[in-house]
Amino acid sequence: MIKGLAITPPILGRISIGRVVEKNGIRLPQKDDQFTITSQVQERSGWKLHPMDEELRKDAPNGKLRTIPVRMLFNDADLNLRAEYTMFDRKSGRPMCVGDGESCKRLTQSGVQSLPCPGPTLCEFGKGGLCKPYGRLNVKLGDDDDLGTFIFRTTGYNSIRTLAARLSYYQAVSGGLLTYMPLELKLRGKSTTQSHQAPIYYVDLVLGKDISLREAVAEAREHARQLKDEGVDQAALDAAAAKGVSNALFEWGEDEMSQVVEEFYPVSTENSTLDKTSLLPKFRRDLKPVRLASE
Image (cartoon, one colour):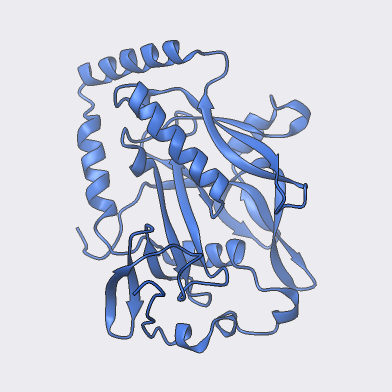
Protein backbone atom coordinates (compact mmCIF):
# COMPACT_ATOMS: atom_id res chain seq x y z
CA MET A 1 0.00 0.00 0.00
CA ILE A 2 1.31 3.47 -0.89
CA LYS A 3 2.26 5.27 2.31
CA GLY A 4 0.92 8.75 2.94
CA LEU A 5 -2.25 8.16 0.92
CA ALA A 6 -5.49 7.77 2.88
CA ILE A 7 -7.49 4.87 1.42
CA THR A 8 -11.14 5.80 1.82
CA PRO A 9 -14.38 4.23 0.50
CA PRO A 10 -14.92 4.49 -3.28
CA ILE A 11 -17.17 7.43 -4.16
CA LEU A 12 -20.02 7.05 -6.66
CA GLY A 13 -21.68 10.41 -6.02
CA ARG A 14 -22.37 13.27 -3.62
CA ILE A 15 -25.24 14.11 -1.25
CA SER A 16 -25.72 17.77 -0.36
CA ILE A 17 -28.30 20.11 1.19
CA GLY A 18 -27.16 23.07 -0.83
CA ARG A 19 -25.46 24.01 -4.05
CA VAL A 20 -22.93 26.43 -5.43
CA VAL A 21 -24.35 29.21 -7.62
CA GLU A 22 -22.64 31.92 -9.64
CA LYS A 23 -23.52 35.54 -8.90
CA ASN A 24 -21.74 38.41 -10.60
CA GLY A 25 -18.94 36.11 -11.64
CA ILE A 26 -18.48 34.75 -8.10
CA ARG A 27 -19.30 31.17 -7.15
CA LEU A 28 -21.01 31.12 -3.75
CA PRO A 29 -22.74 28.38 -1.72
CA GLN A 30 -26.52 28.54 -1.45
CA LYS A 31 -28.48 26.71 1.24
CA ASP A 32 -31.44 24.51 0.36
CA ASP A 33 -34.31 22.78 2.15
CA GLN A 34 -33.89 19.40 0.46
CA PHE A 35 -31.28 16.83 -0.51
CA THR A 36 -29.62 16.75 -3.89
CA ILE A 37 -27.80 13.66 -5.14
CA THR A 38 -25.21 14.35 -7.82
CA SER A 39 -22.65 12.39 -9.78
CA GLN A 40 -18.96 13.24 -9.67
CA VAL A 41 -19.19 15.12 -12.95
CA GLN A 42 -19.24 18.91 -12.73
CA GLU A 43 -20.46 20.89 -15.74
CA ARG A 44 -20.46 24.65 -16.32
CA SER A 45 -23.97 24.86 -14.89
CA GLY A 46 -23.05 22.84 -11.79
CA TRP A 47 -22.88 19.22 -10.67
CA LYS A 48 -24.67 16.73 -12.89
CA LEU A 49 -27.54 14.97 -11.13
CA HIS A 50 -27.14 11.28 -10.37
CA PRO A 51 -29.91 8.96 -11.66
CA MET A 52 -30.68 8.09 -8.01
CA ASP A 53 -31.83 11.68 -7.47
CA GLU A 54 -34.61 11.40 -10.07
CA GLU A 55 -35.56 7.90 -8.91
CA LEU A 56 -36.01 8.89 -5.26
CA ARG A 57 -37.62 12.23 -6.05
CA LYS A 58 -40.52 10.53 -7.85
CA ASP A 59 -41.98 9.37 -4.52
CA ALA A 60 -41.04 12.51 -2.55
CA PRO A 61 -43.88 14.79 -1.40
CA ASN A 62 -44.02 17.89 -3.61
CA GLY A 63 -40.85 16.72 -5.31
CA LYS A 64 -38.79 17.70 -2.25
CA LEU A 65 -36.22 15.03 -1.47
CA ARG A 66 -36.00 15.08 2.33
CA THR A 67 -35.40 11.39 3.13
CA ILE A 68 -32.93 8.98 1.52
CA PRO A 69 -32.87 5.22 2.31
CA VAL A 70 -29.29 4.20 3.10
CA ARG A 71 -27.14 1.50 4.63
CA MET A 72 -23.74 1.79 6.22
CA LEU A 73 -20.68 0.16 4.67
CA PHE A 74 -18.99 -0.59 8.01
CA ASN A 75 -20.04 -1.82 11.45
CA ASP A 76 -17.68 0.67 13.12
CA ALA A 77 -19.49 4.01 13.41
CA ASP A 78 -16.21 5.98 13.20
CA LEU A 79 -15.39 4.47 9.81
CA ASN A 80 -18.69 5.61 8.32
CA LEU A 81 -18.45 9.14 9.75
CA ARG A 82 -14.99 10.68 10.00
CA ALA A 83 -15.04 14.09 11.65
CA GLU A 84 -12.32 16.41 12.97
CA TYR A 85 -11.63 20.07 13.53
CA THR A 86 -9.92 21.13 10.32
CA MET A 87 -8.25 24.27 9.01
CA PHE A 88 -7.70 24.33 5.26
CA ASP A 89 -5.34 26.38 3.16
CA ARG A 90 -7.79 28.44 1.12
CA LYS A 91 -5.67 28.37 -2.03
CA SER A 92 -4.69 24.72 -2.31
CA GLY A 93 -7.54 23.35 -0.20
CA ARG A 94 -5.14 21.08 1.65
CA PRO A 95 -5.60 20.62 5.40
CA MET A 96 -3.08 22.63 7.43
CA CYS A 97 -4.22 21.48 10.87
CA VAL A 98 -6.46 18.59 11.92
CA GLY A 99 -7.44 17.97 15.54
CA ASP A 100 -9.95 16.25 17.78
CA GLY A 101 -10.23 18.80 20.61
CA GLU A 102 -7.33 17.27 22.55
CA SER A 103 -4.43 16.96 20.11
CA CYS A 104 -3.79 17.96 16.51
CA LYS A 105 -1.45 17.39 13.58
CA ARG A 106 -0.31 20.73 12.15
CA LEU A 107 1.66 21.39 8.98
CA THR A 108 4.53 23.79 9.69
CA GLN A 109 7.72 24.87 7.92
CA SER A 110 9.60 22.21 9.85
CA GLY A 111 7.13 19.47 8.98
CA VAL A 112 4.06 18.02 10.68
CA GLN A 113 3.96 18.68 14.43
CA SER A 114 1.78 17.15 17.13
CA LEU A 115 0.31 19.90 19.31
CA PRO A 116 -2.52 20.39 21.83
CA CYS A 117 -5.92 21.14 20.28
CA PRO A 118 -8.22 23.40 22.34
CA GLY A 119 -10.88 23.52 19.59
CA PRO A 120 -11.71 26.31 17.11
CA THR A 121 -12.98 28.87 19.63
CA LEU A 122 -9.83 28.87 21.78
CA CYS A 123 -7.12 28.28 19.17
CA GLU A 124 -5.13 31.31 18.02
CA PHE A 125 -4.08 29.51 14.84
CA GLY A 126 -7.61 28.84 13.63
CA LYS A 127 -9.59 31.71 15.12
CA GLY A 128 -11.91 33.84 13.02
CA GLY A 129 -13.78 30.89 11.54
CA LEU A 130 -10.77 29.49 9.72
CA CYS A 131 -10.94 26.21 11.65
CA LYS A 132 -14.23 24.31 11.48
CA PRO A 133 -15.58 20.88 12.29
CA TYR A 134 -15.42 18.91 9.07
CA GLY A 135 -17.31 15.65 8.66
CA ARG A 136 -17.50 13.10 5.86
CA LEU A 137 -20.29 10.51 5.95
CA ASN A 138 -20.15 7.60 3.50
CA VAL A 139 -23.38 5.69 2.85
CA LYS A 140 -24.61 3.05 0.44
CA LEU A 141 -27.50 3.86 -1.91
CA GLY A 142 -29.21 1.18 -3.93
CA ASP A 143 -27.86 -2.28 -4.75
CA ASP A 144 -25.75 -1.63 -7.85
CA ASP A 145 -22.38 -1.53 -6.04
CA ASP A 146 -21.70 -3.42 -2.82
CA LEU A 147 -18.62 -1.38 -1.88
CA GLY A 148 -19.31 1.96 -3.57
CA THR A 149 -20.64 4.87 -1.52
CA PHE A 150 -22.13 8.32 -1.73
CA ILE A 151 -20.51 11.01 0.40
CA PHE A 152 -22.12 13.76 2.45
CA ARG A 153 -19.67 16.47 3.52
CA THR A 154 -20.52 19.05 6.17
CA THR A 155 -19.03 21.64 8.50
CA GLY A 156 -22.27 21.91 10.49
CA TYR A 157 -22.18 21.16 14.21
CA ASN A 158 -25.82 20.03 14.18
CA SER A 159 -25.34 17.44 11.43
CA ILE A 160 -22.03 16.13 12.78
CA ARG A 161 -23.27 15.88 16.38
CA THR A 162 -26.55 14.21 15.39
CA LEU A 163 -25.01 11.74 12.94
CA ALA A 164 -22.27 10.76 15.39
CA ALA A 165 -24.82 10.11 18.13
CA ARG A 166 -27.16 8.09 15.93
CA LEU A 167 -24.39 5.94 14.47
CA SER A 168 -22.94 5.08 17.87
CA TYR A 169 -26.43 4.31 19.26
CA TYR A 170 -27.41 2.06 16.35
CA GLN A 171 -24.07 0.30 16.55
CA ALA A 172 -24.66 -0.36 20.25
CA VAL A 173 -28.29 -1.53 20.14
CA SER A 174 -27.65 -3.80 17.15
CA GLY A 175 -24.76 -5.56 18.88
CA GLY A 176 -22.22 -4.19 16.42
CA LEU A 177 -24.28 -4.96 13.30
CA LEU A 178 -24.55 -1.38 12.08
CA THR A 179 -23.98 -2.19 8.41
CA TYR A 180 -27.10 -4.39 8.33
CA MET A 181 -29.49 -1.84 9.87
CA PRO A 182 -32.16 -0.40 7.50
CA LEU A 183 -31.67 3.35 7.88
CA GLU A 184 -32.45 6.60 6.12
CA LEU A 185 -31.01 10.09 6.06
CA LYS A 186 -33.60 12.65 7.09
CA LEU A 187 -33.45 16.42 6.70
CA ARG A 188 -34.57 18.34 9.77
CA GLY A 189 -35.04 22.04 10.37
CA LYS A 190 -34.65 24.21 13.45
CA SER A 191 -34.39 27.87 14.40
CA THR A 192 -31.91 29.44 16.80
CA THR A 193 -31.08 32.91 18.06
CA GLN A 194 -27.91 32.79 15.96
CA SER A 195 -29.98 32.12 12.84
CA HIS A 196 -32.23 35.10 13.75
CA GLN A 197 -35.18 32.67 13.88
CA ALA A 198 -34.69 31.70 10.23
CA PRO A 199 -34.80 27.93 9.68
CA ILE A 200 -31.52 26.06 9.36
CA TYR A 201 -31.31 22.50 8.10
CA TYR A 202 -29.24 19.59 9.27
CA VAL A 203 -29.04 15.86 8.57
CA ASP A 204 -30.30 13.15 10.89
CA LEU A 205 -30.12 9.35 10.62
CA VAL A 206 -33.24 7.38 11.51
CA LEU A 207 -34.71 3.92 11.06
CA GLY A 208 -36.32 3.11 7.74
CA LYS A 209 -39.96 3.96 7.23
CA ASP A 210 -42.55 1.82 9.03
CA ILE A 211 -40.03 -0.31 10.96
CA SER A 212 -39.51 -0.47 14.70
CA LEU A 213 -36.17 -0.70 16.46
CA ARG A 214 -36.90 -4.30 17.48
CA GLU A 215 -37.75 -5.26 13.88
CA ALA A 216 -34.67 -3.46 12.53
CA VAL A 217 -32.34 -5.31 14.91
CA ALA A 218 -33.95 -8.65 14.07
CA GLU A 219 -33.55 -7.90 10.36
CA ALA A 220 -29.91 -6.93 10.90
CA ARG A 221 -29.16 -10.19 12.74
CA GLU A 222 -30.78 -12.30 10.04
CA HIS A 223 -29.02 -10.41 7.25
CA ALA A 224 -25.66 -10.74 9.04
CA ARG A 225 -26.18 -14.48 9.50
CA GLN A 226 -27.02 -15.00 5.82
CA LEU A 227 -23.98 -13.11 4.56
CA LYS A 228 -21.66 -14.87 7.00
CA ASP A 229 -22.97 -18.23 5.78
CA GLU A 230 -22.22 -17.07 2.22
CA GLY A 231 -18.63 -16.24 3.18
CA VAL A 232 -18.79 -12.44 3.48
CA ASP A 233 -16.30 -11.31 6.16
CA GLN A 234 -17.54 -7.94 7.44
CA ALA A 235 -14.97 -7.83 10.26
CA ALA A 236 -12.14 -8.11 7.73
CA LEU A 237 -13.68 -5.31 5.67
CA ASP A 238 -13.79 -3.03 8.72
CA ALA A 239 -10.16 -3.89 9.53
CA ALA A 240 -9.04 -3.13 5.96
CA ALA A 241 -10.91 0.19 6.03
CA ALA A 242 -9.38 1.21 9.36
CA LYS A 243 -5.91 0.43 8.04
CA GLY A 244 -6.54 2.44 4.87
CA VAL A 245 -7.82 5.53 6.67
CA SER A 246 -4.83 5.54 9.04
CA ASN A 247 -2.37 5.23 6.15
CA ALA A 248 -1.93 9.03 5.99
CA LEU A 249 -1.70 11.89 8.49
CA PHE A 250 -4.40 13.87 6.66
CA GLU A 251 -7.37 12.65 4.64
CA TRP A 252 -7.65 14.66 1.46
CA GLY A 253 -7.81 14.33 -2.31
CA GLU A 254 -6.77 16.84 -4.96
CA ASP A 255 -10.24 16.95 -6.50
CA GLU A 256 -12.04 17.09 -3.15
CA MET A 257 -10.15 20.03 -1.70
CA SER A 258 -11.18 22.58 -4.33
CA GLN A 259 -14.79 21.59 -3.67
CA VAL A 260 -14.32 22.05 0.08
CA VAL A 261 -12.91 25.57 -0.30
CA GLU A 262 -15.66 26.58 -2.72
CA GLU A 263 -18.52 25.21 -0.63
CA PHE A 264 -17.41 25.87 2.94
CA TYR A 265 -14.92 28.75 2.66
CA PRO A 266 -16.42 31.09 0.05
CA VAL A 267 -14.74 34.37 -0.84
CA SER A 268 -16.94 37.31 0.18
CA THR A 269 -18.10 39.76 -2.47
CA GLU A 270 -15.95 42.60 -1.18
CA ASN A 271 -12.88 40.37 -1.32
CA SER A 272 -13.76 38.66 -4.59
CA THR A 273 -10.80 40.16 -6.45
CA LEU A 274 -8.30 38.88 -3.86
CA ASP A 275 -6.47 35.60 -3.96
CA LYS A 276 -8.07 33.27 -1.44
CA THR A 277 -4.84 33.03 0.55
CA SER A 278 -4.86 36.81 1.06
CA LEU A 279 -7.72 36.30 3.50
CA LEU A 280 -5.31 34.48 5.82
CA PRO A 281 -2.84 36.31 8.05
CA LYS A 282 0.71 36.09 6.70
CA PHE A 283 1.96 33.67 9.33
CA ARG A 284 -0.68 31.16 8.24
CA ARG A 285 0.16 31.47 4.56
CA ASP A 286 3.80 30.80 5.38
CA LEU A 287 2.78 27.83 7.54
CA LYS A 288 4.85 29.04 10.48
CA PRO A 289 4.07 27.33 13.80
CA VAL A 290 2.07 29.40 16.25
CA ARG A 291 1.84 28.91 19.98
CA LEU A 292 -1.60 28.00 21.24
CA ALA A 293 -3.23 30.08 23.96
CA SER A 294 -3.17 27.06 26.28
CA GLU A 295 0.56 26.38 25.83
